[in-house]
Length: 500
Image (cartoon, rainbow, N blue to C red; front, side, top):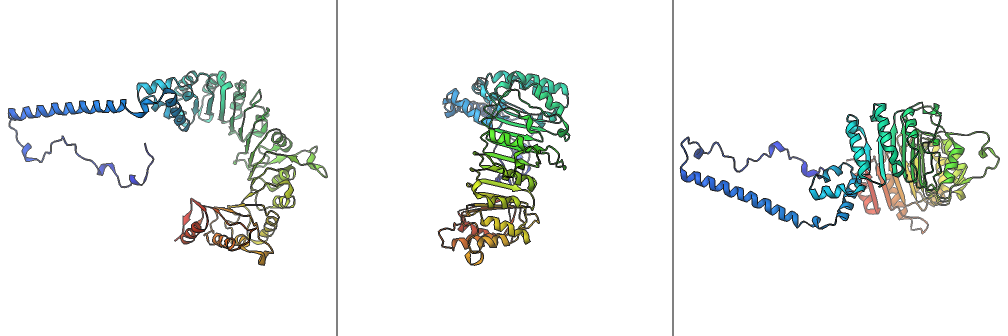
């Protein structure tokens, strides 16, 4: 079924009922006659019925002939199986529908192991676990030796016996699991998962672990795995200590740590800094993000030396701190050298000492091009250290401003970006090509237009034109937006209200 569109408007079904052609109109005076029909009319009615039956048969024959010559029937089973695989990858529920189209399609579906590799338990199965168990066993059998995608939300499984049955059914097949996504309500369930995961690891490429229990920092940490994960590329731990990974991950590219936002105490799920550095330096991680985190340190760490040696993270290209205190951000940036870092996204409140540190040591961040600031102050005295730091980062080509601390971003930062040497002595961020603003209720587009026009009119080779704008959840003047689209190559507006 196609997605809803504008054409669905004003198309109420009860206003579009059409009477079938073969239903007699009771108001037709020719039908108001109780006498027996003449034999000649009865013969005509019989002929009409026979002709209509013949027409229905001919239409069925025509449909069968069209079906036989349909192009899809000429596809080989292997190619048809591959098409099915792409569809099931987008929506696992498509599998059952495919098997109901025809005998041929069902035969292809049953003979394609890769179509049966998705084992998903979500809220739709919470009240019918026995049905899920039957489906799980069928998928495990029909998938043969193909790699498995497993997504189990045990928060929808009330019975410990059902949990045990699911884990016992999966255990012999975890050696071929490439994507493992598991959520549990408490640490007891996570311990049960650990006890049944001894065979998992060699094929694992994608990992997501989550526990809802708010007292997890009081539990003894343990590793879910008992053998290395040489192919693991992506790992996300939500409200879980890093010990849960606890095995070599020589191919890890993306690493995400998320603390439960419901925990207000910074001591909840604190991450030991030296342990974090050990993971980051032992894997070729390209993207690292941490949310609601708090780093802990001990007195034996190198960071307490007079001149500590920065840990080199040669592969890290993207770094994100969301709701992380400024002290932890500073500690991370002071303790590392990031020669490949291109994007830095920070939400640490109004304190910007970490940005000042970057600007004073640009040699440790030579590739930095994109800076994304959230929940900062862009008005008053706080603007001074921000602009001073940006003066020392002329290599930046993109600047993001999201959800300013006061709710408004003001015009001063844009005035600085539009001002030239006559005002500031030099251009601020001369190579700037992209600006993104999000959830800034006072942004109307006029301030962006000033920046765009000022830089286009600079006529200086060292000053780049703005070629990309992204405006999200702002109040835009439609006339200004039209002007921006004429001057800027790409203008994206997402969830943005256009003012009148």
